[in-house]
Length: 153
Image (cartoon, one colour):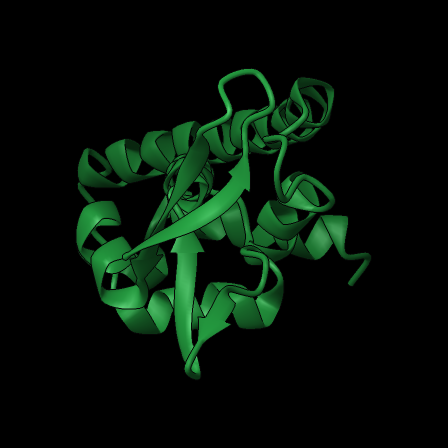
């Protein structure tokens, strides 16, 4: 849907503001309409304009949704994404805020990698232990001993 916007003083011509329905945004962004409603509800997207009770979005929402998708792929929670985009309805997402949140996420990812490497090592050891039963396995007994020692029991 195309709606007239305020005129341009330099050209004297009216600028055209393209407004998209929720279905058009969903199709172009590759998300469900229910996701768009949810993003509005939780503050990830600003509330859409309404025309005869129906949501209408500026094309700029597509860039915001690309940021949201990237943040989701990188493991950011909804609260973190809301924090990332808060206050930047029309001007985009601040790169300083992105760097701050990305640095924190990178620390979390490093911790996950360390844990995953430890788990992989334990699994590899368990495949080569040769014990007849797990409850008699040296690896299991050592882990149990470590846990009871560290918990003070």
